Length: 406
Image 1: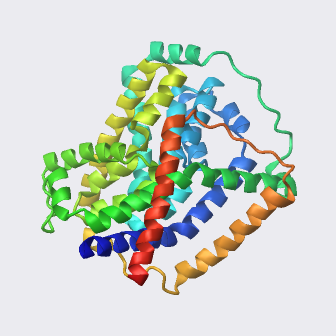
Image 2: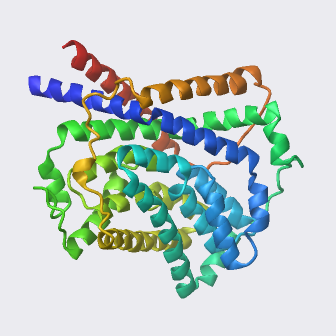
Image 3: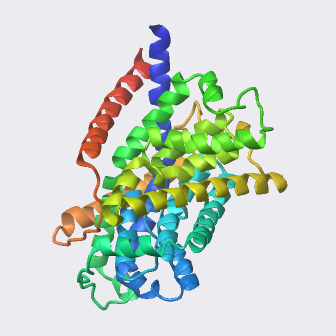
């Protein structure tokens, strides 16, 4: 029993440390994301993505890069862009970029995994788009695309967004109030995922033995980094399976990805795990609701195939350039998370900025409305996740009490 209490305390303390390490990065990323989503409207995106295919892919990639990292917001925006004239391939480019190339994800990855994984995330995101584009050109699913547009129905009327330029908006208190509303919405979209994801990461760090990872990911353990092709391929396939089991979104998955790498999983396997937020069942179900099951399964095939290809290319390219990261350098289980350093001061700064944004949008300018379309989440899944998150808070509170006072 004493061993359990010790591990419980370690798990809760590790989770709290993960939150503290990532707090300023979440705030910075979501502030930037909220500003972009208010000052660069979806209507402007739609006008530029329906022309030449290559231009549409480039623009879709760029607009995805400056978009939100939330998978459900990305799905809704992708559906809207596709419905209002963007080509299928540019819509897929937007979807992949908005979940893999976004700024806030890169910041979180840099904290937990290091620069090689940041490079892998952004280069891999471009590879995912390129491989998907090639597959779409080769398969040429014209009938599926036609039926998908038909399934979406007629175009809806565009909401009036005014004629203000982004420079005028930057000077407007009303626009900044919308930024604060969007900032609140970003946190509302991810708080459950991040809570559950970080708590699972703490539990895995404290309770799960290395032997479990060695069984799940073939060839790991004993400091082994010389994997065969088939071992790497197995890691790439198992990575998405692990993401499916712990579906908690790309932002919440990063500490767990760091733990996987620290336990000896290959670079390719960890990248596949990070890339897997669009090949899980909730996303499959939403795409089926939007486009029909045939198109949803085609998108699943497309993204999973691209994921395998991108992860393999990244691994062997990094190996060729001798820049594969060393798992011994990833030390997320730090015994002193809360020391006075740059993280402490950055957290204070961004807590103050967050406090002002909450005051502006939710108290001073309560009259300002700002709504962004979201993909239709499962109420059962969301309620389950909410209650699991509350259980996580109880677990964390109990564990911290045990860690410091027992």
